[in-house]
Image (tube, rainbow, N blue to C red):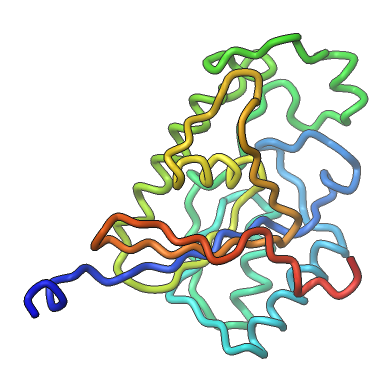
Length: 215
């Protein structure tokens, strides 16, 4: 009986990528360059908000990146489902150095990808290395598990959320971008439960985009 009584309560996290941004639509390397949502991105967020509202989905708190595309997504959704937002820069996208804001074809000319990228090498001269990104993701996860029991919505970015998945699984990144890659589509989300009693993560779904009407 005492084991049940003293068992730490569970936490549920929904990790959501922002809606389509102008940077996505223009095929730019975004990183920490700031881009707003497109009309399509706004619609994606509205469709998700509507689906969750109709299903009675609720959260105790939303935690969002401070970048515009994430903040807009967060506000559209939380206004509908009546959830408070906390903004935290730790959930920002990867710092991709001199690639930030460049069109993909521009980047190929100005920063042709090397044959091999070591784990600790900065991206595009000054950006976060794979290892640095992993350490930031692990720090973000460590902050999450200290929240009180409840349901939390995290609005972030595809590259960073990919590394968060690595941190949750205890899967360190590999050199040259090898290893598993966890794709997050625009407004795709993953639902994951953390059970402090046995330090266990339970993955319920990944990259759910069922709310998008016209894919």
